[in-house]
Image 1 (cartoon, helix red, strand yellow):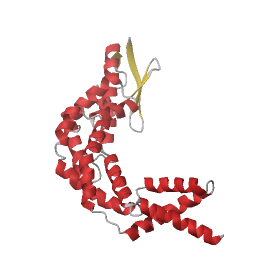
Image 2: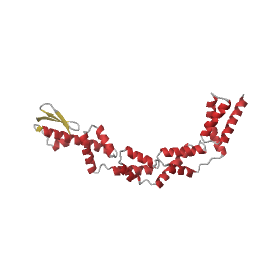
Image 3: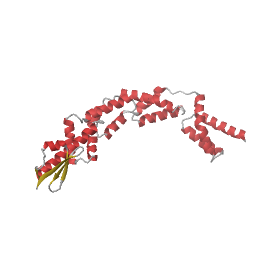
Image 4: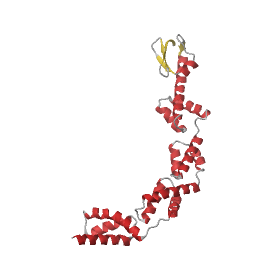
Length: 269
């Protein structure tokens, strides 16, 4: 089949090519120039397919270059971006190849930048960095290569930095609860158990008996009121004791608190 171009209409960013059979094709200026398309030009089926394929590739390049204006992408992310934008699957690999050849897409550099930025931020451990790289679709071999730049010493330094910030968050807790919660928080953020525990030990969390008891009262008073709504006597004491003991408070201090609460209650009768 031979198609004859009857009209070339300029759109906002592209051109609409109309053929004598009323068929239309939207192409970019790059495609128009590449194939020297003019009015009355005759387009064979093979040439039509070639133009369509070239246009699809050109559109994919535009999508990719626009995306890269805003941030860096991994190969996996760029493939997904192109799919979402409706780029033909057969052209996606060609776009990726174009970007690689022009040094616009490089998973090793991309992974290295992620590692360096996360190490500098001192908020995440090695496992969190590895997880992020996996989520970006980085190949395991590249992950193994780039994560070497996050040493054990660097992770410990980051863990200490995070632990110091977390200390203020849990200052109302018992000493044991502070240590436990900070350690758990560090591990959730990808730090190894050894470095989490070491960082917490370096905090040297201290609290006098008076400070510990003040924290216990702050935690225990609402527990006492809540449990008292449903229980009294031995059952109340037992439930309050278990609740506060599970929070890491000293058993003797918990018993002292319960005794004082009972005395206050008896005095108010």
